[in-house]
Length: 236
Image (cartoon, rainbow, N blue to C red; front, side, top):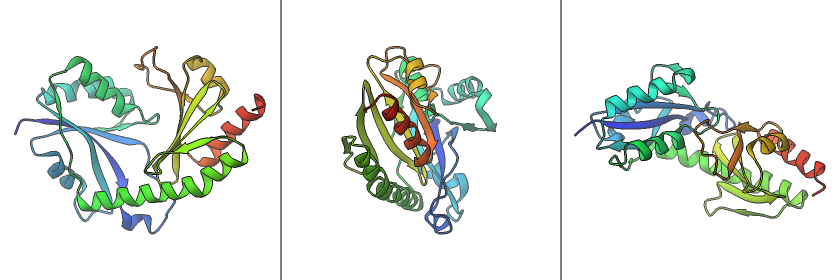
């Protein structure tokens, strides 16, 4: 099998979460290559008995994986933590790398990743905790503020509008959530000004994108502080 380029992220296993249900893993991604199928490499990364599991979330073949890995490592060097691990505070790395490969290596083929059972169990546990919090904490708070909203089918995202903004609140890892801010009429600078704690997206985001800013990997209290302030400031 030819080399495969992959992006992986570490997540807590179900066993570790039993000790702290609110624990969350920092926003870290690993960019590497493997000669084996991605799911086989996934099992090797930290071992099947490790309390921490690594999940491969994207993988591509039919490309010069070694050269592209080296190129991406150089581009992302200022966010490198150690070796192949990079800080992804804005949670834009996966989208950015995907766009990069689609644009400059269109012949690359994205391949599916089969989850290791332990990784799948850990992910499902995270998703259930996030979904429960959406129903017990997010929805009641939005109702209190009089904000109409819809919930995605899997319960992982809540969509709502405030003025000229469309907002999507998503549960990423246990105890941490991300608010993504969209607008067709507002600029990124206006979004950053309107929503406290928000951050600009990656530098290579296209100017015509309606995705303006993001409050990444934050506690719900921080996100709702920003939402409440905007609602009060604009008398919504």
